[in-house]
Every structure is written in structure tokens, then in C-alpha cells.
Length: 59
Image (tube, rainbow, N blue to C red; front, side, top):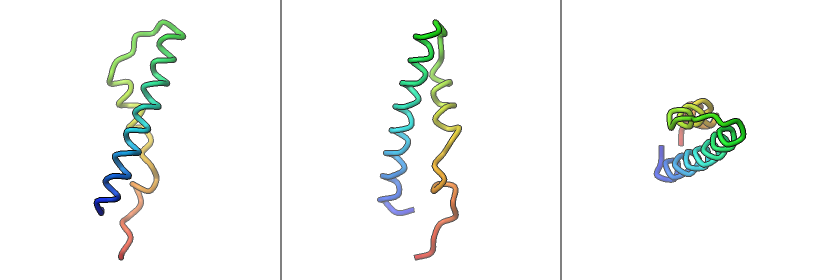
């Protein structure tokens, strides 16, 4: 994985984490449910981008 790929991965993880935090906070506020950090981690890790699961391409 090149340096650019790591930057792309980091940006993707940050974006999905932000979305998960928003979704979990909205759910908790709307239903009065107390959720934990683990709930956010699970939501972020549940669906990694397809390109990360693909085998590396030869240069």
C-alpha cells in the first residue's frame, strides 16, 4: 500500500466514524438509549470499503 493509499484509508475511516457517531447519537437521543463507544466502533468496522478487501494490484 502506498502512502497515498494510507491517507485515503485514514480519510475513509474518519468519515465513517463521523457518520457512525452522528447515527448513534441521533438514535440515542431519539429513543433515550444509552450507547457506548463500542457501538460506534462496531458500526464503523462492520462495513470496510470494498477496495480495502480487494487484492493489491500489480504496478
